[in-house]
Image (cartoon, rainbow, N blue to C red; front, side, top):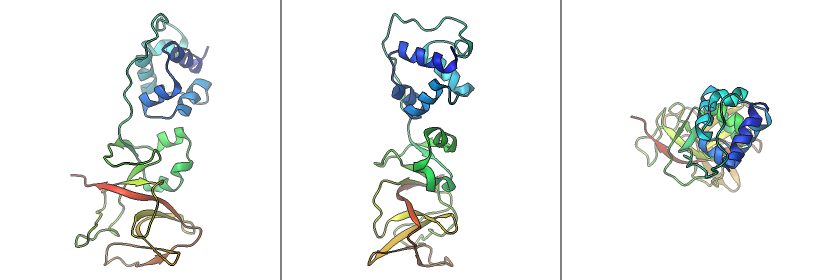
Length: 216
């Protein structure tokens, strides 16, 4: 029996679902399934947390030594669900929804609590540069501010959005303008060199900004 098979056996002994184990680590059920199939393997930290979760030892998970958890009591233990949204580099944003669960875990720098309603695909990134800085306007974003982005939120004219430019393969933080079906974006900073810019059919809206945090 290998590591993955032991993880599966212990999970079943605890009457836990793949989703319950995934929730304990802030990952998807498919990522746990990947462990059990042997496609991927938990790192040392996750092995320690798995051992604690199942009431056994890392040694038993690795080589079957030591006594596994008892099968007499099958009451699921309380689980702590992950708190907050994944913080990612803005360069990862264009293909965030396409990434597999394990890839998303590798891209996640940390998790930050989000007080706003959001879809499961939402994430957090940081504001690059000063193109959206306008302290005299109704909205302003400073370099380094945390912004929550929801790919499932409808993008309407006036929305603050992340836009992926196909030709240059760059991701921009801009305000979206739609006039007569034509999509354009603009920076909020009145002193920014680029002003209103038209989007091509190949350019895509990565997500809509649903809130921000100002780090102290």
